[in-house]
Length: 461
Image (cartoon, rainbow, N blue to C red; front, side, top):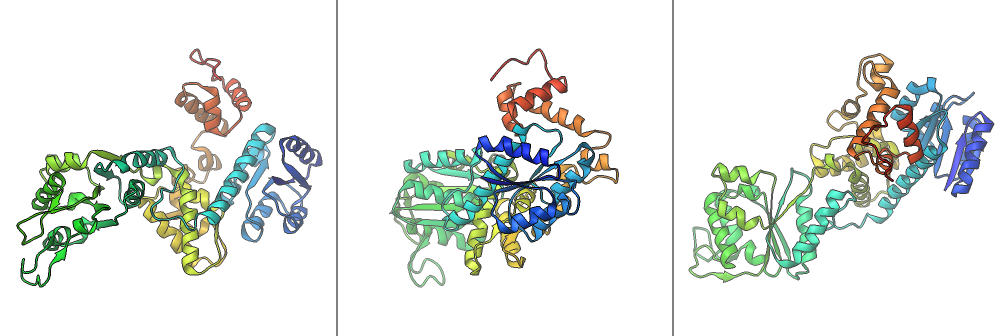
């Protein structure tokens, strides 16, 4: 790693450099914003650590230049106690993080490493995910890894799989992954139950013989037969009319399909995967879905979590979509700026993965540069305002109310955050420090400073 450290206090800059060096970080120094700008134009760096208050070009002006004209790299701001409001504003302008002086050098080191790792991950996504197929799960969250694990284990068995989840979560992608894991040589055949009129759905699924009805001039093979040796994916299974649910149940039980107008069944060898965004238990109780069919398709059930519950997957998904869209448009590979990644990770995405993909495509089309920024996504259903409200930053004019919550100081909010993390982790200090993104030593100091030591607290880890 190569880091640029900017501070008008030479002793501070040199002490950070000396602390970083044994940790494998090579550092250059600059003592004002203009000097830093020249170094950034002449050399390549992995991250920038900058003071806020400096003569000439200050840290905020340097940050804006980096975001608008300079290299794409994470910026970590260092501020004095009186600069807190400016530090928060710097975060809104695209800074990766900030620290208040005096700070624990271990904490700065940890933030720099995380920032560089995130940047390298984002760049590798653009380079390595352009060719990601639509039959691969993209994500590193525990939830998605568990989905992939179950699919890998269940798919080769031929068991019927039911995939549930909100619209846009990627149920068809999971079905395609299941087909790939099944190692079957036949095709993957998808059909959306809600996309066909009821009178056409039966013939599409089961096929028909010549003369079965008016207009049936030739024999037609249905989708069940088309999926022979492969997988048939019935999306939005709850849309299937009751009388066709009976026929589907018979096909599952007998492994034979009977074309319209035929008196005999045709054997079918396929895997059946179904999906729905509805609560099938409620549909059964309401009499809109057959209970016997429900138990037949619900052998292996997989719930795809909404995107808002796995924001850590957003950078990977966004990078893959951006690489794919850039290639389709014939543009050179585009990148996602750190501020754009943070903006997307803080947005709820009511439309889930599908909304994220559409947002990336729109931003890519309308952007003039090669790097997408947070401002390129402010069209998202409330955009910046929605993100600020979620962060608790959209408040009245008072600086304290706007940034920290009415009547609460930064220290009080930090104390509450640490206490909540301790309780979530049963006062296990190692896990709590990891969750908060600080070192164990920093956590111990803050526990002591805020008087958070309790009788239930033990010397774990």
